Length: 182
Image (tube, rainbow, N blue to C red; front, side, top):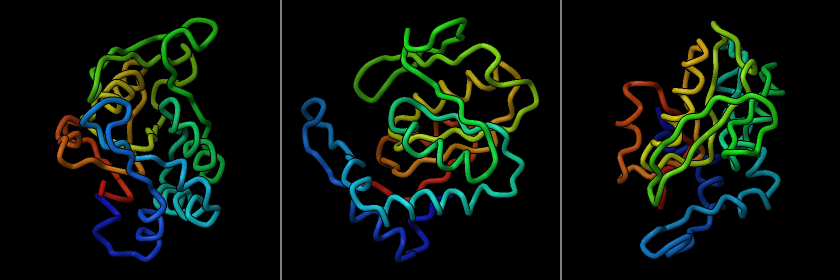
């Protein structure tokens, strides 16, 4: 499901604050920069509030945020819905015992790690990131959570790049996005 189809003025306000940077981080990439969204307190709050409205009362106990921009949106959502926040980090950033999952990006390869014991079997999880492109990062996040017995309820992203068909890689797992790339 996608909020951008609703033509909500809040969605338009959020979308208007996202800057597109051509050829970053490499030629041919149209980078969707959310830092300009963060500079506008109303647009930032509206973004978080729309996610909170969707997930409040859904019995979600874990909000898993993907490094790095999932760390911006995940914690305020987690606090508002009464869930814990679990960071999914790049390799060698978490101390102690971790589990990891490799994945392919739109422009390379990477890996996500999570602390062992951060998520318990049977917990209901929401995966949060700023953007879905090819879907590789979200798939890796879901696999990490499901490997420890969590139920991934949904993935939530601010932006979707529909031309890259990342939604199709999610194997039917629900995805909620606020805006489509421009």
